Image 1 (cartoon, rainbow, N blue to C red):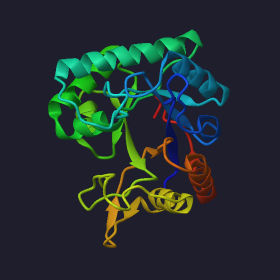
Image 2 (spheres, rainbow, N blue to C red):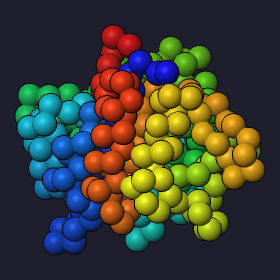
Image 3 (cartoon, one colour):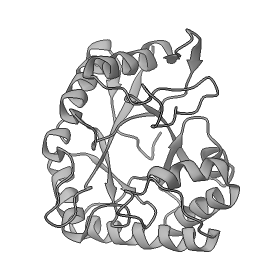
Length: 256
């Protein structure tokens, strides 16, 4: 049985008059949030408002930098050099940090978004660029990434604090990776199923795969995607399930 876990949600993904997600309802469930930084989603007004709302609920604030691809919501890979990724990371971290600082707050963590998150697991150049950018910006930040993944291994080797992330609303494959969204059943559809997966993670230390095998996972933080259908209902179910299990919901902290 796990003693504690962070519950993080990706928010601040609206843009102008276009609204994404149920942020106000989701804020009531999270212990930390990852705020889009304007590249894959979000804009300055949305970023500032999301920081303000996070502070109302005493949530840890994290940056959610992505690829410069609003049309593809940052979920399409792009052929970027390490220098381009490094500069894009710094740009986005600086923007959100300014919003937090203006409200007498600060960033606690950084979590790459979408395709950038997965590219870092496949390409050591991308992983290195992300790590170097976070370290150059603020070497006290926690870098959140795929549980047991290559990005976090590289970050830890460079002396950064890391947060191993697992997912309540995605299925895993036998190789330990998330099943591609294009596969049937890869995205968990109901609040009940997401809550059951979250409970398996905190009580058993992993998830049961489609073939019945058990996959162990290190879980410092549990993610639920805020852009999916029934996100608020699912977040409530997951939050209630974890609280009911006896596992404490606590944000990642610099004290460990």
